[in-house]
Amino acid sequence: MIGSGLKKFAEANGLTVKNGVAYGTYDGVFLTLQEGAGWKSVSAAVYFDTAEQSDRVRGWLGDEARQKEFRIQGGSVTDVSVKPGSVQVAFTDNPGTMGKIEAFLPLFTAMLKDLAVKSTQVCHSCGMAGGDAADVLIGSTVYHLHDSCSAKAEAELREEADERKSTGSVAKGAIGAALGAIIGAIPWVIVYAMGYIASLLGLLIGICAKKGYELAKGKETKAKGIVIVICVLLAVVVAEFAAIVAVNTADGIELGWTFGEIVAFMLEWAMGEGLAVVLKEIALGWLFALLGIFQLLRDTFRQTKVEKVVRL
Image (cartoon, rainbow, N blue to C red; front, side, top):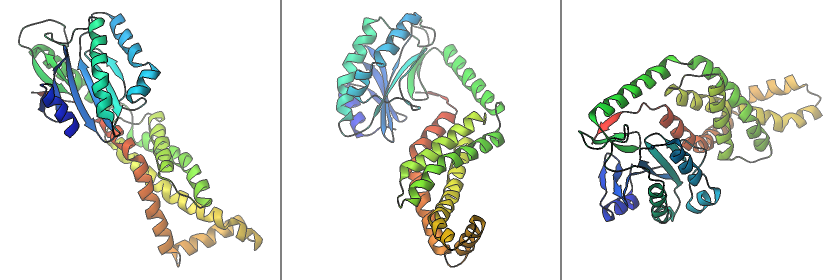
């Protein structure tokens, strides 16, 4: 996807807008620009002659002061990525981010050129010039590849997709996600019992569910995101009821009830005259939880998406 800010930048700098990205040569470097919910990214298609080049690029981009100055993201799917063939940098998208990117790019391209990193007039896979090279979109980056290198990339992507399908177990991942969601729901119960609710706690449940899925070696497919959503929704239901019990436990103890009697009474109340109240609280809890995990889900589905080679 590409918005008006990047489109204007592309038009002003002679870049091509196609297939949801802007790409072309900018200041001697072959760039791709793209954006999504809350982020914008810049990718440079490159060929590293030595490991030292990639290490120095990684060090330059890893500078904390530089990351803070230009709002460079970290710790997400779309953060700083330096690998054979590309350098990707993602920016937190707030008002003024386009200006940050425009200030960042001349420094970025100058750094690549100072390190003699190849970016234009070469195949970004083999590093050779000339031949039948053409522009292809893989993921969020446009590369210049020979037909044979493009075919090799397609084969590697298919192999990676097949490996994902054959590795791990959705069932084991679901068990791990459920346990993680329960752990992540504990703060929700505490905060709700104090009379508050926050979407950030929904994000915490989602993070714990995702981590539980991964620790249990769940299969990396789109089912991962669906499992996380289900576990988060169920965890909110459990957390809401647990919070209602927690709020009323003190009153029950004063009446001389046992904890089991308190739970039984609240369950009977929740399924009877209190049903409308409970459903309203659960619906509100789901709303806040889904708001909290929205970006997490986008990143999860993007992670498990099978990339394809698109010829431009």
